Image (cartoon, rainbow, N blue to C red; front, side, top):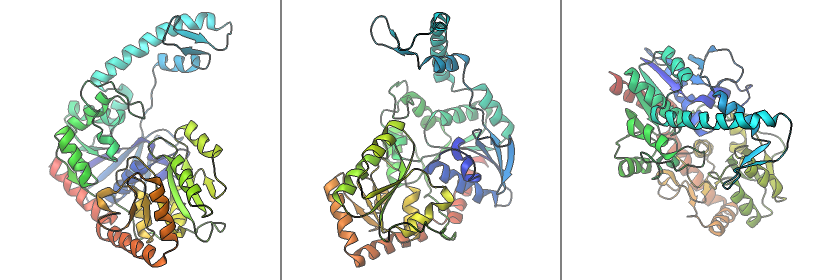
Length: 421
């Protein structure tokens, strides 16, 4: 069986020295690819963007290859022009912020570039085809192509599979992948500037969809009339925790995520103020630069901000934390929840509760969008060791019973074989 994973930002997981940022989707893909590569009869390839690595490379039994990230001449030209010229909604339509002699010829060409970029975008939204990436996928010659989350790369992979008579498998990563605005013909943009029509295409045409939670299965049926297979998020429960930094507080509350409107790190700052002087540690990867900067500018004295921790070291922080907190508006099944469960660290979440993990399974507390209630829950657990340990033990038991990586890979292999054979 030849399986190709398409998750372009995952290369730093295979090579921790490589530059780049990644999230839960990349971890999900990396864990599954390495597990499938150990199975007899499987040839696993993995498409990643260029991080300076060789064009082809073999790591942990997985054949890595570079997925081109091309841009048209018009897009590159407009990107260079953007610092000096801004678009306006009224006449004369453009504002020049810094004049130079070169703009005399660049402005007319900029109009041609804008028209070309607009036309190419319209063509793309009908075909979801980028020749360079299509050729890379053809060379993988896989029986099934797996893609993670709903975005333009997913649309391209699904479109390629339909044309090439290959099978496509879409693995949902978050409830945000299933917004009601994802409809055929919709040009409404999500937080990542992906049009609804584009997102809908992958959801509508993937040969098989894997959901992480029963809530996602319900949304797929209700909004997109699609059935799905449920496979829970995997975690390697046997890998020991790395050494934690010696300068961590003895007791602290931990937040991990990206700086964007989806994860809402700024709400953790408000939470920390309500819980002062309890120490908070926030590991905040740069997402939206303006949100990251606002977090830096508003940092309370009881919060320590860390911009980046390599994935292979992150469990050192989780294992030492007293509580894990989450302020996301949407999630799938956050991998960090499973990391917390691995070490018996309970979770307090503002909004998300995947598969009732915090409420029905008593792995923590969900505050139902009430920040003062969330602060009260944090203070309560910090002052009640027995209750905190009980919730942590529940979360640990759930992770061990439902999320062992080898067992989840077995479920994925069965799904792939039923799809292809």
